[in-house]
Structure formats: structure tokens, C-alpha cells
Length: 236
Image (cartoon, rainbow, N blue to C red):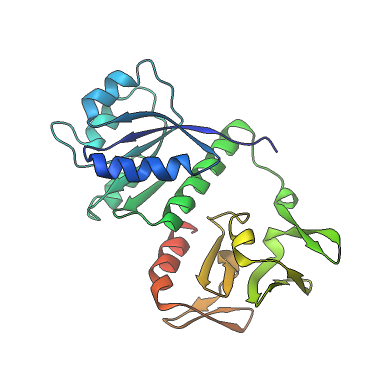
């Protein structure tokens, strides 16, 4: 599958907020920063001769809001709203927003939103990929083993090893959780505990302490609960 590279613009009247988003964009292999703007009027003029695939857009700006900007754009790219207020969330999705990020932005939520944007781009330009095309290779017993992500329930850290639990079987590999966290799609997998990354589609129920996958209780870190709720809502 061809690698996606989305041309991005950041629109925010706060220079500090732009700087934080710019850093996240520059650290992402599928994003390329092509423009920064500090207000809607500057953005309208800039986009006349600058092609972008995705805009990280603040809502509350002087003179014209982010919504006003979108009303005036004849050709709208994908939009990820970035704002300090939650009250605009419902209105944001009237504009077919990819996602709605609340300041300050966590890296996990950023990656989740970008993953959705990449998937939408692929659907538009490449068509939906076959379900069986969604996999990673894992080195096990000196061989590369194909793991289909729709069959993967969760992975668990076991010291210097990582345990893969799939619908078919379980196996252990010599690796770190971090190495797989970057490979797994952020819109489908979430690290809910220092020792567990889970497939969001496999979660059957959860409470403040645990999630349940196929009757297996898996611990949920207290500070990860809000990330889980957001990820499950975005994954519906």
C-alpha cells in the first residue's frame, strides 16, 4: 500500500499553540507542514495558492472564527478542530470534521485524529483496502509472522518480552511494547496500562479499573480512562 503524505496547515491565533501542533506534525512521518496562519483572513488568502489536504483549525479567533473561515472556503480540505472549549463539539461535526481536539492536546489523541484522517484520504484516493490487508509482521522464533490486526485482541508486556493474544492463539516475542505501539493504528489500538495495548473493537465492557475482552479482565490505568472513553467514542 502506497505511503500517505498529507500536506498540512495550522491555523491558530496563539503562537504557542501553533508551535505545539507544528512539533507534532513534524514528528509524524505521514504529515508535511506547508503553512501556518494566525487568523482566518490570512488563511483564506494563503489557501488561494497553497494546496493542503488537512487543516488543524482553531475555532475562536478574532474577526472571523474557524467556522466563518470554512463557510467561505469553496474547496474544503479535511479539518481537525483544535480548541480550548468543548461547547463547539456538536457544531464542529456539522462541518464534517475528522476530529475535535481539546487543548492541551495529548499525543495519543493527536495520533488518533491523524490516523482517521489518513484512512479517509485512502478511502477517497485508493478505495477501501481489503480487510485481510490490515496486518503487521512480528519476528517470532527467527521467522517473520503475519498478524492480522482484526484478529489481535491485545498485547501484554512480560519483562523483556511481549505476549500477543489473538483469536487463534497466543505467542511471545522478544521485543518492547513501544516498538509495537508505533506500528499499530492509533484509531484501533490504545495503550490502557503500562503493560497492555488493546484492540478497541474487542472491548466488551469496562469500568474505572478494568476492561473486559472475551471474559478476560485487563487492568485500566486511572489516568488512561479519559483517553479510553474518547477513543471508544471516536471509534463508533
